[in-house]
Image (tube, rainbow, N blue to C red; front, top):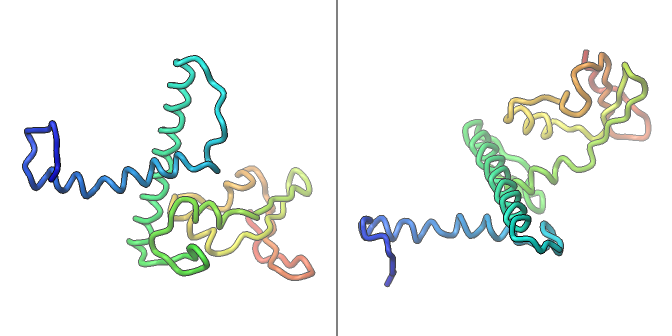
Length: 160
């Protein structure tokens, strides 16, 4: 039995809305995660409301990133390493952000930088958003080296 105050909806539509509720709840679960929200010491209702608005905007951005990356992976019929490195075509935003951890950019001079730990998966994900590796060091640099792993720095790509 379902109760509602939306009398203009059909029984079928009420049931569809009820079954889709988990999607919204997952978003609020993310927002209420203790890792995401530390203790808040606000007293004024106006500031509390403003912070709530910022949290909702963060949730919106989180969901937009997830929707776009999943759409791109589905259209390209691609996968990426998900939780526990299991390939997935439906990564969460957290999984996408996690794979970008560890990328470093060392500016050697104003004209030369070295980007470490930049892998093909990073390039693929960035391309799905219409971005390239220049998001890490800007368009003004003429020479950027992408070293491969190992004890010696080997240039795998120089961007000009």
